[in-house]
Length: 228
Image (tube, rainbow, N blue to C red; front, side, top):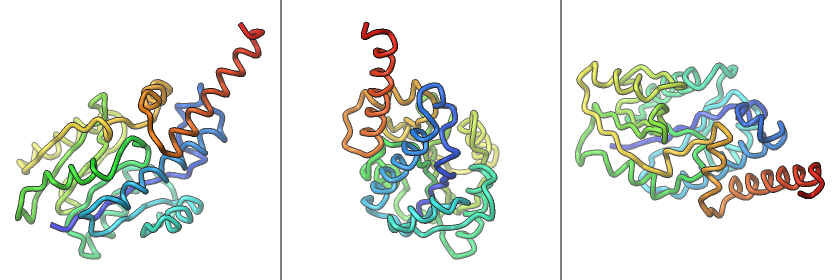
């Protein structure tokens, strides 16, 4: 089975609004781009992928994605993650892609080996139908989703998407696997996610920028409190 990877990526300037209590608008934009660059670098290293696509409605994201070696599917406008993925998978199905691995751009712990681990879960010789899910750390989100064929089930990203996707698959009696993966499971949405991320010592743009931004925030708090 040939698997194509797809990353839905919204405009960096509109990303990570829930980090507002911790980061400025410029810092959130910088972090969102850094996470995308880190994740896509691992995608490029991963073995066994037949194609590497980004779907976006944003000009800057498209420019960065192309510079990193991605094939880009352009949405007419940003209408949310679910719409972006549906738009892209419809096009990829028409182009003959037989299986699709969907991962978000905000899982900065992911490595090429993690992606390869997901691909290794595909039973040998299977041509489909097949679905594999990797939940987020709180088991409410879906942080990796492998679909063969790409339009095998309806999708709905956002709150409790993991339960929704599981119900779609089991309701149709489809073959399914679901695995736990600590690196894929950590997506960065809220301040506590960023703090959890920094517990790991990683050599990536996202880690360096997050550590820098929080260190600057702590220094500013100390300055305002008179150094106490």
